[in-house]
Length: 252
Image (cartoon, rainbow, N blue to C red):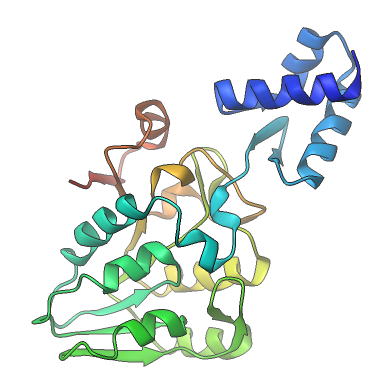
């Protein structure tokens, strides 16, 4: 079998099953596991899958830059934003991550809400300028333009000075085994630190992120308190994510 034929077979299996295992593919295509591993490396370099131990998973479309992500799953993110906004209570200090899902959250906060939102995203902060009763704390550092968030030592120091009631997390991949992941190492570190400084973490996950992985792990799934999803979520992927202690809520 030619290399391109194997690549097509791998991508077909990935689309069909949501996961490929090198050993099973080697047996099915009658080639060595080393050959399949080379194929997976080649496909990962092209950005069409994400290698994991023993095989590969689909790459998350949410790895695109902030502007392009704004056009993905717009209605789902709006629904997630409404549900997330309903979870914030007066008097709370809340961390809000950068991203298009969390932007939908702050855009739908009630005008009467009296809370403090701390964010390392200038986009999120700007969206709250006109809110009459929400205080905004900017957590500054070096601007990572791809995601529109601050990273580095400055933001880490600012985060460690706070203790939040809740953190609304944004990631690009949610997988039952690999956990919560994103596309940049520094960004992953900031997210992990925000999780550590919050009493609970809520993840807003549009259906395009479920069963996907990105290169840098933020935390295991067990570190999550609440998972917000939409009716478009694949039931099989959702069942794989369910576990004791995780509150899964479906938006309208």
